Image 1 (cartoon, rainbow, N blue to C red):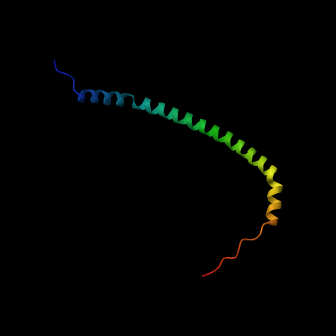
Image 2: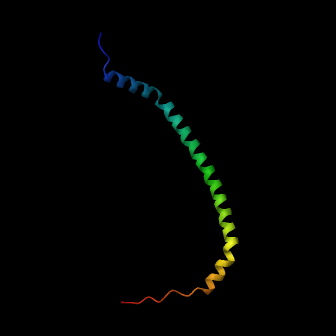
Image 3: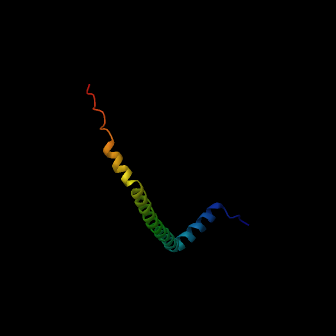
Length: 81
C-alpha cells in the first residue's frame, strides 16, 4: 500500500478551502460586522461618560480656573541672540 504523503493532504485542504471559501468569507464578514457594532456601542457609551465627567470637572473647577488665569503673570520675554 502506498502511504499518503503531505502533498495529497495539502491538495485535500486546498479542495476543501476552494469548496467552502465563500461560506468562510461570509462568516468572517458577519464576525467583523458584529465586532464593528460592539465597538461603535462602546465608543458611544465612553463618549457620553467622558462628556459627563469633563462637564462635572468643568463645573467643579471652572471658577477656580477663571480666577487663577487673571492673576497669572505673563511669560518672561524671549531673549534674542
